[in-house]
Every structure is written in structure tokens, then in C-alpha cells.
Image (cartoon, rainbow, N blue to C red; front, side, top):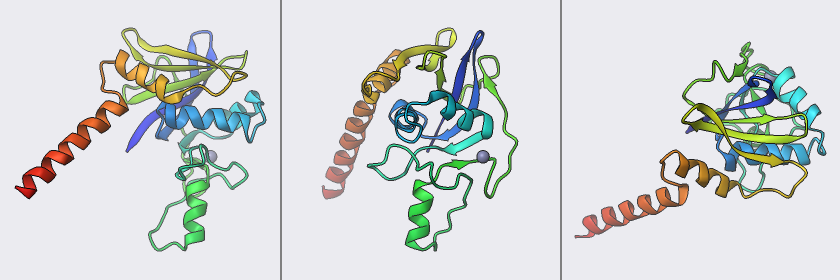
Length: 196
Ligand SMILES: [Zn+2]
């Protein structure tokens, strides 16, 4: 499932950045950005944003599909790769760990700049970095895209699930824990009716 987002710089009017396709909620893209900054880029936010916003024009995912790796391995080649089911295990592992954009590799899309005026409703989260090295976590509120959290990248890693839950509750949605509880109850009910 795609959860769309945007990686951006704070501007005087709002923000300006690039599209990110998969898992853009705080426990996905928020966490990936934090780890990419502190890991590969050793805290150099400017260098990270040059790569993510200036050198590439849109992202499929900067995350990793491996559960214990919060972000892709940026030492690997960056680019879009079609995954074909009969790939060898090594190729599959590489695919899971590679940063994938829409502008290199097997795709060469031009991409576009997303800002506060053209952001579309299906873009659920924006992560906008200011000059002080802080990350604004934005999502939809009463007045358009609004800031729900301000994370100082020099602090300890925040609780991403708590941030995500707070946004869900503010937007009148179920939290992930509530969704899981509901789906488990539905599954138990199905199992019970099949057994009857
Ligand atoms: Zn690219």
C-alpha cells in the first residue's frame, strides 16, 4: 500500500520538496529520514537534502523492506528497479535494501516540486527541514497542511508511533493499534463462524 509523502525544505511560504511514494507515515519515512541523517550522512542535513531534493526528482522509497533496517543503504546504487519474481536471492536482497527513485535506473521521470500551494490531497505527510536542522512533521489539518511536530535532529530519536498516533487522532482516524485490534477481532469472529 502506498502512503504518499514529501521530503522538503522549509521556505518562507511553507515548503518545497519531492514526492515519496511508499510508507510515508512517521514510523516509515519519518524514521527513515532520521536514520539516514544520523547514519549515512553523519548529521549533515544539508548534504542529505542536496541528494534527496536536488539530485533526484521523485522517490519510490528511501526505506528498507527489511524489518531491522530503518532506511535503505545509500552506499548502494540509487535508481528504479523492476523486481521480477524469479530474481536470485542476492538480487532480491539488493532490491530490498536499495534506495529507489523515479529518475534513475529503469525510469527517468522528470518529477516536480511539491509545495504548500500544489500539494495534493493524497499526499498524507510532509517532512520539511529548516535551516536550524529541525524537521517539521506536517499533515492535513483544518487549514491545509499543518505542522504536527517539530523534531530537533540533535535530540534523541523520537517515538514515531506516538507522533503517528497523535496525527491519526487529531484527524479523527483510528490509530494503528486500534486498527490492528479491530482486524484481529474480525478475524476471530470469522474463525468462530467457520467453526460453527
Ligand atoms: Zn534519481
